[in-house]
Image (cartoon, rainbow, N blue to C red; front, side, top):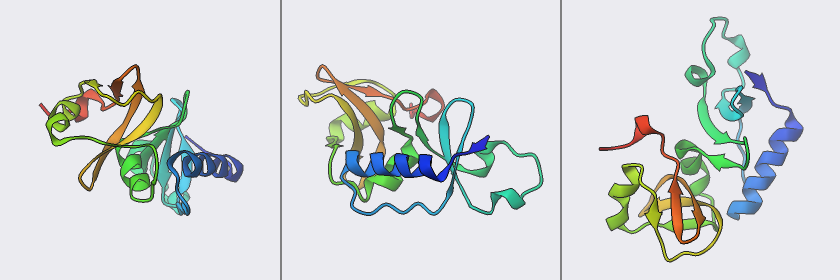
Amino acid sequence: MNEISKKQVKEIVTELKEYYGIKELKLNYSFVKDAKNKIYLINKDYKKITTNLRINQLGLYFINISKDFRLSIEGSQIIGKMATKNIYKMPDKDLKEWLNGLDLETDDNSIGYKLIKNKDDFYGVGYFRDNKIRNFIPRYRRIK
């Protein structure tokens, strides 16, 4: 568990602002990276905690930066309220399949990550390519 530098935080925030069309993005948290390049948002006072806790017990999983910037479900909910682009409005008929973890067919032929939105709620991100949406909902979070 390593807190990332202010420069790296600024790069992540700038990338998110540009990609999702966000005018103002202030995340008043420490950004901490684990061994799998997952970034967690943690209260800035986390260093005062003396017990040995795992990072996922301390903070909120926000984004994976292994290859690209892939927001978690909670990350999409934080960013989604402010985003103005790269949002896919999922029809009600597809929502259940999405929550089951299935990839979906779409008429959208764009390439890249998009926030998945249904009504006023965000359900993570999907990767769009070849008229398909790749689902990243982890198995343990899928609804059967």
